[in-house]
Length: 150
Ligand SMILES: Nc1ncnc2c1ncn2[C@@H]1O[C@H](COP(=O)(O)OP(=O)(O)OP(=O)(O)O)[C@@H](O)[C@H]1O
Ligand SMILES: [Mg+2]
Image 1 (cartoon, rainbow, N blue to C red):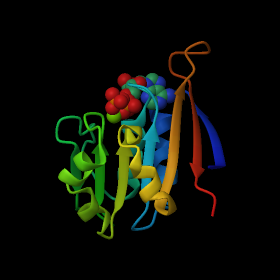
Image 2 (cartoon, helix red, strand yellow; image 1 turned 180 degrees about the horizontal axis):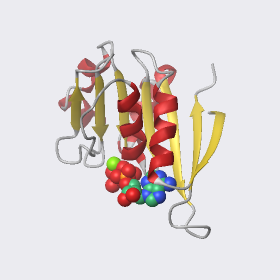
Image 3 (spheres, rainbow, N blue to C red; image 1 turned 120 degrees about the vertical axis):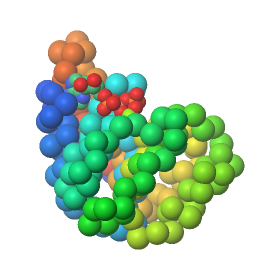
Image 4 (cartoon, protein in one colour; image 1 turned 45 degrees about the vertical axis):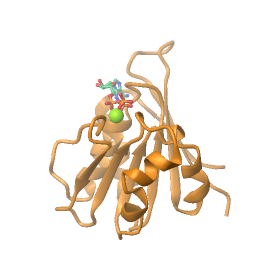
């Protein structure tokens, strides 16, 4: 993986604002994976990106639904939470390939739950890694953005 950008945020608003900036450069077909512990700020990042895509809904983790679909923005947005999945078959069962075939932007929380995902879609993935820095402050996050080497 190639490290593209590094940021620090100090509030959920700053993380959301960063999501807005990154969201503004996304194109149909892009898949943004978000890694980081429970409560890292993945969903707040997605909420910012949704805003810049013209989606006004309140964004929450699709923890129970696995995927939330938003169609009223500039481009359709699909927001996945793979926390409860454990295999590529699980991913096929939720129709991931069909979603990936659409001209949409996809956000995927907990991508590591399905190991094959990054291999199969690597040319389309922008990886956002959010790290808590509790030793500095409970609201400090370090955020790194990577993509696979071309
Ligand atoms: N700098 C920050 N950026 C984002 N969230 C922050 C920050 N500082 C504190 N928070 C808090 O951390 C929590 C982040 O919640 P969020 O739902 O975005 O996390 P998540 O990574 O999606 O978690 P989950 O894996 O459970 O879905 C919120 O309660 C938010 O207020
Ligand atoms: Mg979340």
